[in-house]
Image (cartoon, rainbow, N blue to C red; front, side, top):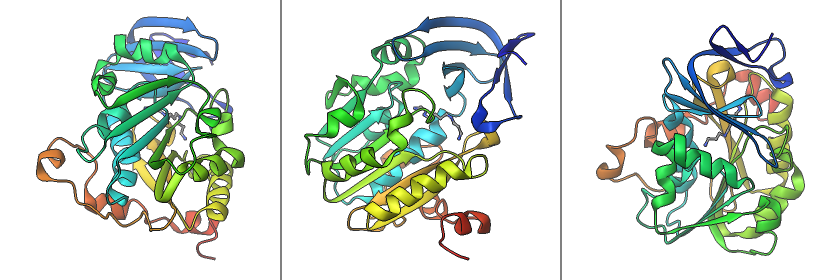
Length: 286
Ligand code: SPM
């Protein structure tokens, strides 16, 4: 099976072997081979513009809000007063857009390895890239693990919005990176990382949860429904240095909540309720 056939894009990966999500496209808007990966943008028939890296769907205009809101507002609301926030990856700007809704934030650093992803998102995915317009944002084009190495005890919240662990995102799923993130957090810091799907690749999610369980006082996995990710599902691994991130410490004010489509305080708590096989997988229940 080819990635492009009869006007349809199919997402093919060994991470979901033998299964492929297909989306009907109207136009191939952009294609570029950067230093790190192939970047494609499609105009789809029913999902708006779609950003694809190395053949893997990163975001569609139809449903990007679900992932970006949950990956952002869970850690941000688990922390009582996040002032310094770091995004690793997230070059489309969607997570920046969500962080920017929080007035308590004073500084937002984003460390994206591939400058071309930012450039392309500003051109074709403007509803997400609007996040770069916030004056609190500083952009760093660098490797995430190297960037955080000398920022000891600096951040309240770190959000890792990575691609899958095949390609430039691979190191972001390994223990040394999590050790560096822990060092870069303040004593009451919170992290949230792209946690993959326990339905499709339990081994990847279990490895992530094992790493986090050893390093952090609290580590938990929250589910997010995203129709244009394989299986219609992804998760986030959320860790707290001192407090349990499953419980929001702040409720978003009505003027912010009214602009959100997925996150609220109820789903913050409910997203951490796991099916039995996942509890077993994470050794939370035999
Ligand atoms: N800001 C959006 C960037 C997307 N980052 C996550 C992409 C994950 C793509 N693969 C999902 C595979 C399902 N486990």
